[in-house]
Length: 279
Image (cartoon, rainbow, N blue to C red; front, side, top):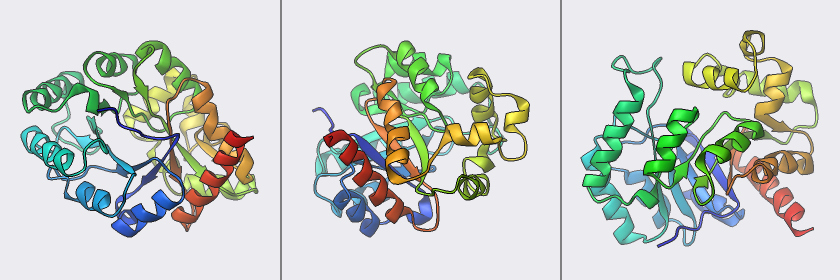
């Protein structure tokens, strides 16, 4: 069964995610709600979010190979699929060396995790990998339905599509804030992800591959880097920046809302993006 993710996805952090928020996201016109951070292996929240909606797909961004037992995740997948067929996409990833003391051999660890999911009957076509670099993107291409990267500008999407090839899902996430004052928008970004995440090795290395320098990565990000990672301005400008990923080869664009009212930001972005699409 093919899963319908829609043009836009809404990424919400743990403290922002609940069934009421899922219903709001669905009403705003999003195709997918991405459950951020590392959910427990029972994926109980995924089921509650699906129970609260009628057509919305839910994806994990991402289940952590270090902390979520693969056998339990596989059983959770089957439970959710039986209750809500065709509405759940399992995103998996390797986490960050700054968080996990046991972090080693990330490629081999993730490969082994995918093997265990497959042994548990999880279809490759319903799994995606949080892949950034070329090696992980090739793993996503060869073993899953595609990739769900984050902290990436549209140039990464262009390069990732070249590696994944046609027919694989490419589902990048991009930060957004409907703020016309560039200085205020950058200040918000630097006090939250993405600014706070620039010290994470996986993200920093990926941005260096794209041509950003140590100066760009210092002090919560240069203006150039923050502007590449965060769509800001009036709603139409924000929407156009997000849809640049689609023009670069994405199948779907995930929106990470910044600011005090993430649901309001998601509504504004969706309205502007659908207006652009319509006309």
